[in-house]
Amino acid sequence: MADIEEIIDNFAVLEDWDDRYRYLIELGRELPPLAAAAHNDANKVQGCASQVWLDTDVRPNGGDGPVLTFAGDSDAHIVRGLIAVLFAMFSGKRAKDILAIDAPSLFERLGLREHLTPQRSNGFRSMVERIRSDASAALAAAAV
Image: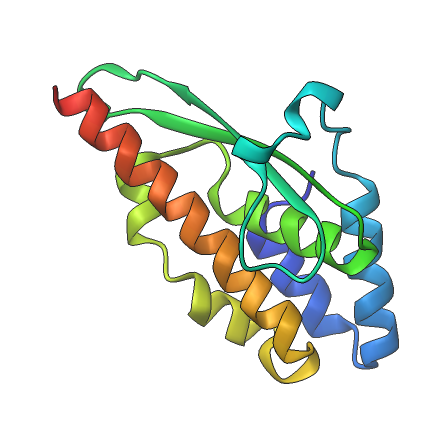
């Protein structure tokens, strides 16, 4: 899976938004399949027009705090691509680092805000909030 800097670089090379949408869809196709059992209400992201599921795995990492990895799925191709972008930003990172990432500015750097429908932009924000909430909960649990 591509890292966020590679995605940003690829977006910069693609001048046409149709090509960028195709790239986003391709990123979504590269997501590993989400287990059928993970398609449940607990993993469903509220606030998305499409069906979106995010499954979070929290691993303790000693004094550095917990590390979160994510799996996800959507019934919409572009949204699956957005999930892949989010995973490139957040998955495999420490909870405290996740909370420090400025996702809206990365979203802006990709030029997605002005080229997605308001519903998809709201869904993207809902996914970011869910990831940040999971990171906060992991930090709180590790502090106990």
